[in-house]
Image 1 (cartoon, rainbow, N blue to C red):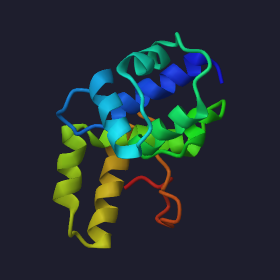
Image 2 (tube, rainbow, N blue to C red):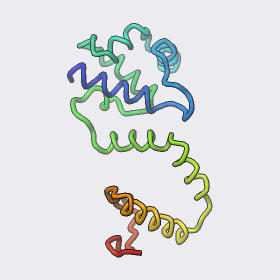
Image 3 (tube, one colour):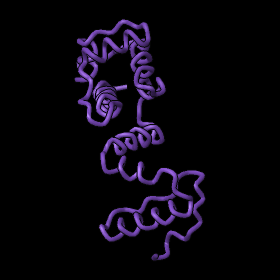
Length: 151
């Protein structure tokens, strides 16, 4: 894998895998946490080199430890290319950090499936009004509501 691709993936993890209002982890804090949680010693300088693309041949042991700490499969950092499914999950986590999305999800907790379907339809309509691309149903959701029909 090229160092620029790895640095992009690492920086995405640092940005995404954090609490909503917390700043991204510093390299020093991440290095200490990775070392403590995985038992694999890693330095802040090494993380900085990986994140900036200066380190071109990282060890698999370090990549596995970083992946374990951030809760992603090691293949995310080891393999070349982007796993579209995993990338979508990481982007979704980033979206959920947005306060407005969290607020909507909190308010929707406990609603019936019929109410949730009504809300989905309203959101789909607002997306059309704002000329945003449609979002398909979640895998296994089986909405079957005729998304092409106008509400």
